[in-house]
Image (tube, rainbow, N blue to C red):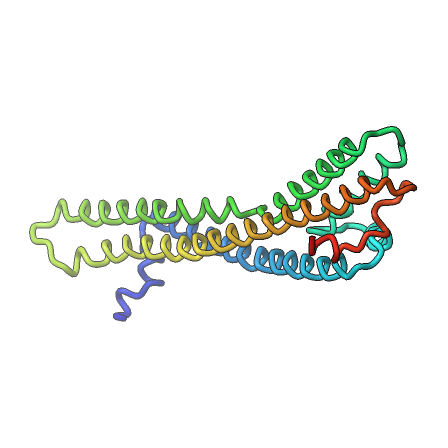
Length: 242
């Protein structure tokens, strides 16, 4: 590229409004990439934790021991948090006594639903920022483009004979704003669509686990098992297989 029309030189010699627009777009790009990398780690960890928990849950072990292990660690997230909330509420309602089985199951389902909503809200955090950057950056860049072109043609008002060399810097300056706007928007849109799909898949996975765990609790209540413990004697693998 000709040194006189290098991108850095165009930005440095641009008008103040265009420089402000470019600065905002560069800042938006940094923010979006920071969110992209952080959200990638969060969602990957949520998938790994769900897979690990499902292996432990369907291994046929004692669910009360699984609950105590999760509770002792504290700060459970994802599917483990859903299980912890549902198990705790089920055991609490059983200990009270005199509560019909359907109400016990409903209370456990509500507790799991609350945990699921909290987890989805955690996973969706900052996705709206990506959507905002992806949808507004092209228009912000377009504003810089319009301003730059307007400034370029305004400068020709007092010129008797306009040449391409006189117009080219202003138009190039304007197009730089558009390019940076697209550079900020495209990754944000791609990441938002990808992460929104992954969060949606995790939400379906959590909902499926809630139904399967509710089935285990329902079978335990229907058998009229004694004691306030949750279904420690029920083999989850058998329940999953039908």
